[in-house]
Amino acid sequence: MEELSQQTQIEIGDEKYKKYTAYLENIFYNKDKPEELEKFYSEIRDLANVAGLDSGILIEKFKLSLDLNSLEDFVSSAFEILKDIINLNINHPEIFERMRRERIMQAKGNIRLSELVYYDVDLEHGVARIHIAPGKDINPILILRSFREGLKKLAKELEEDERIKEIKADSWIVASNPGLLEKAGFVIDGPITDEERERYFSGDPRPISKSHINRETFLEKYLN
Image 1 (tube, rainbow, N blue to C red):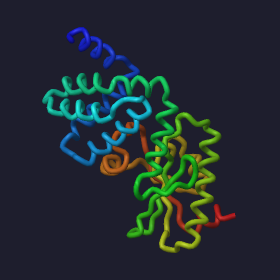
Image 2: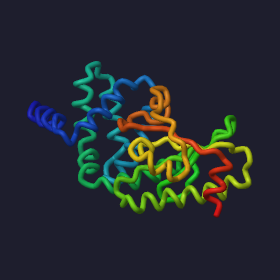
Image 3: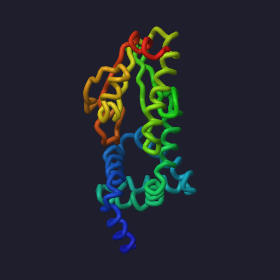
């Protein structure tokens, strides 16, 4: 048992595991939030299914580890429980990217526009929010094509819905490639706030920025 624990500690310190330990630390600090835990358990069910593992057993073991008071002990225990899933994710990231996309697309309130693009609506403020699903396994050219396809489809859907007055796009792509959004007609609004990150992008360490375009400009640009 001691040998196994030492092996786990060595792996946790490995560079390739850093983002997973950071994710587990975030779970530890949010373990008093049932909705956050349920999202995590849902993800574990999907990942375990891909890996051919019993998700029920994994989740029950993980719940026991949440009783640990030490962050270090929790991360070590949780890492050992989920190690097979983590290693599979590292070795076959494309499988998990596809699975994450489907889970996001099927989430309540999300409406698919293309392979990578989806949106939700805030009717109270007359806003449609465009999102780009995970796509690290997809060629950048195809990502751009999917983005344009999604914008054109959204224009057709909003043509008949005059309640939407503004379209917003908040994404890591806005932060990393603002020129792309500007060419698409969007105005760059700058980085998201800490509150917005906590609400919409919890667990995503990448820089994320906001952008918008008004209804008239959007429809004029993408209806044809």
